[in-house]
Amino acid sequence: MELIKIYIEYSIIGILGFMSFLTLWFGLERVFYLSRVDIKTFKKRGELENRLTSNLTIISTIASNAPYIGLLGTVCGIMITFYKISLDGSFDTNSVMLGLALALKATAIGILVAILATVIYNMLARKAEVLITRWEDLDENQKI
Image 1 (cartoon, rainbow, N blue to C red):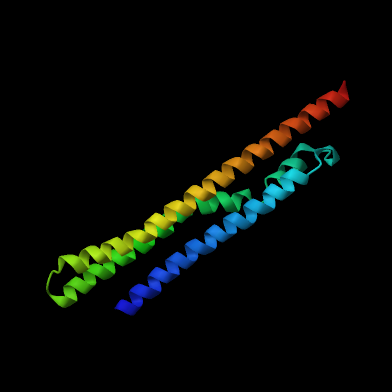
Image 2 (cartoon, helix red, strand yellow):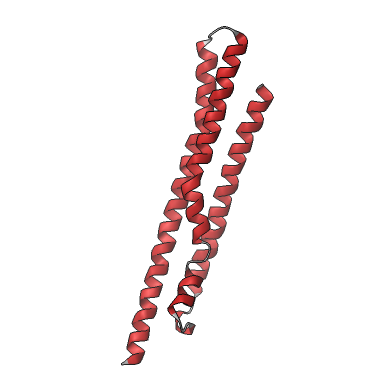
């Protein structure tokens, strides 16, 4: 049973680690792209918007799902702790509290990943919005 608990714990933490890696990877990619993009080369708003918001969906999906994956790890950890209690036939407060504390670690990590992804998403979405507004202003000035 202890081996299953370790596998679940490392799997959940590994998934959350991978999600935070993806968030940082796509976030940095967007930061570099948005800092170098020449909005004057775009003729249509839709094309500009698609290019500026590329990969933001992945970041927002990670932001909304990371807490649930952390919660899944916590639920699995609690279930294993209760199963272990039922097998032992005795109630040892120290082992139960240790099992619950370790199970809550997954939720805490999931929340941290979600906070990171949400902050990155909001910063990038705002930067894309500013660039789109600048493009519209350029377009209006050219018509005058």
